[in-house]
Image 1 (cartoon, rainbow, N blue to C red):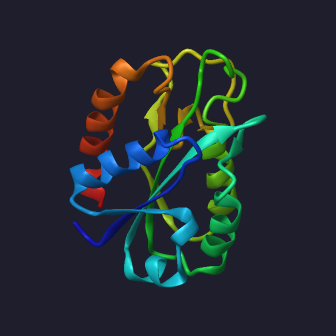
Image 2 (cartoon, rainbow, N blue to C red):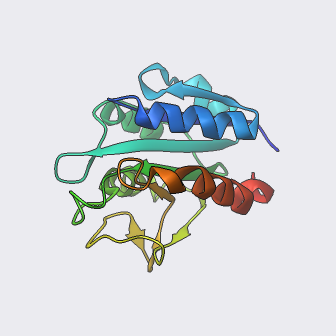
Length: 164
């Protein structure tokens, strides 16, 4: 596996805990997006980006500056995967929309995006994170479906590992 870093934005700790779990399984480090530097991006070939979803489908607040850091970096040739936390029951019309907002901010960067997930195992009404009929990354509802979180993470990591 090439150099990999997990970058997360978390307000309540849920996304942070999931980022730490993913990083541990991959044997890499996880950092808060507040601490993200251009050097972190330059030093890693693979970026795994995670955000919770707030308001009307927005990414976590710290990601607004983090997204600018990503947009100002050279992402050509990088491999990027996403994971997003959301509440599909209470916010079924914006489920993991923050992940979609993050993707939309860098989708023309020249990076290669991996880790899309079928929508069939999720109950929601709408999501900005669905592109061409699939989630652009791993959606997690640790509020209502916490019993599925670990198996979803394991299946997702298994699906992307060969591409990292």
